[in-house]
Image (tube, rainbow, N blue to C red; front, side):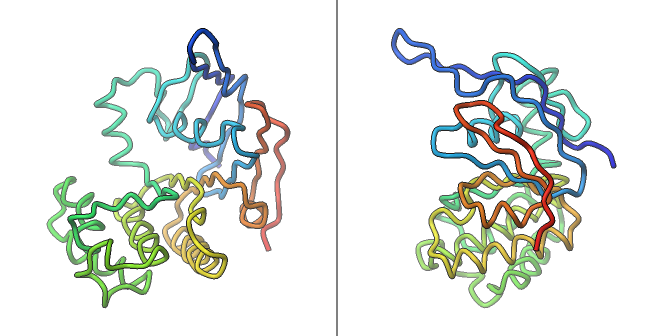
Length: 229
């Protein structure tokens, strides 16, 4: 299988006052196309920072990242944004829906930005897949947390991403609602054949992926292959 994400000797340091804080140190791993992959570790271990670097939202101080066959360090800001629009999907802990847009508009906007003529039709199909076709005209404030995350799921798959990054996708949901969202995430992912990379502190969720990368103190503790139940 081809590697869709290659991370090599990544380092990221932030300056706080007169101190330098190394958040990630010598991180190396790869993800094969079509795999499910989780990054786990305690708070402050560098999980979210790593996800942002892998998606090209930030630049490392050292090391290299190849995403979908492209070296991110060779791209400028606009080129990285274009790569994300075409190849990458995102799911965030806090949903990040646009409050002035309806559920359907939130899902359709990425497609419209790409010039798709059938954006609304595709948006409705995706909302139907996450069980929210009857709520298409509701605004985020009129939806529960679980419903908002399902809209975010539909939006994440709208541009048929090659790779989907999910940052604590159940972090703001109760256990029962979170389980439903995770089930939908894996079902949609399998149907689309997308590569899935999840950042989570939930080991039960991590065990549902094929590979687990453990971080601690900004370093790789270990990496292992799992057999998802």
